[in-house]
Amino acid sequence: MGLIALSGCRLFATYEFVDTATGAKNIEVSGEIVDFLTRVPISGVEVCALERPDIACVVANADGLYTLTGIPANEAGILEYTRSGYKSGLHFVVSGAENVTTDYEMIDEIQLALLSAVLDPPVDPDSALVLSHAESNGEGTPGTVASLDPASGNGPVYASEEGIIDLDATAVIDRIGIWYGLPDGDYTVTMVHPTLDCQPTGGWPADGLSSHGTRAYQGYLSTAAPFECQ
Image 1 (cartoon, rainbow, N blue to C red):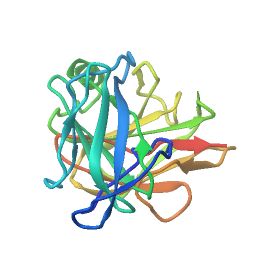
Image 2 (image 1 turned 60 degrees about the vertical axis):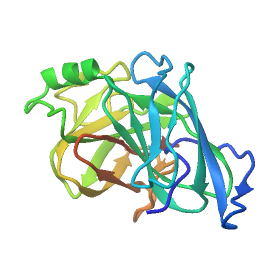
Image 3 (image 1 turned 180 degrees about the vertical axis):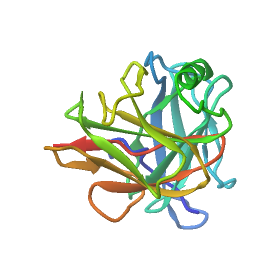
């Protein structure tokens, strides 16, 4: 599988370079990694191109910043984020011809345990999870309904930005929907609001403007591309 660019967040063009050894065009991926709840930068996160051992992994610095180099332009792939004490995370992305900046939020094991405590069945820490969220001009989009195709596992359950789960919620409380206990495989995520048009800001292409593709892996939280609703 080739790799990558965006992590489902907005792209910011900088410059590109050519691998003089092969003549192939490569780009850089840079970003900041923060805690899902506190938004505090996380140092020591290893960032890799999943299943691409030819691309060197990097480690986020004290400010949670990283730059991954040697990424093939105009290809699809997966970014992997791992650190002790946090749920390993994946982003599903498609690169363009320019360098990009993409930020990522990680959920720590304590947050995951608190989430599991209120769910029935509970979250298996070694299972596959998919998280998606929708927003409108930086604000939440209550009432948005999230769906996963094919339907599988448990969910969606809906959480506030503070990570509080409402088990009775049938639509987005603020912006987040979570599926858990999923078998490995490819899925399509769709977010539909009753009055707004929600479209993914990145991620793997899928049929329909309100959908994008993702993949579940055991032991990982797959973060789907954010949806922008207008």
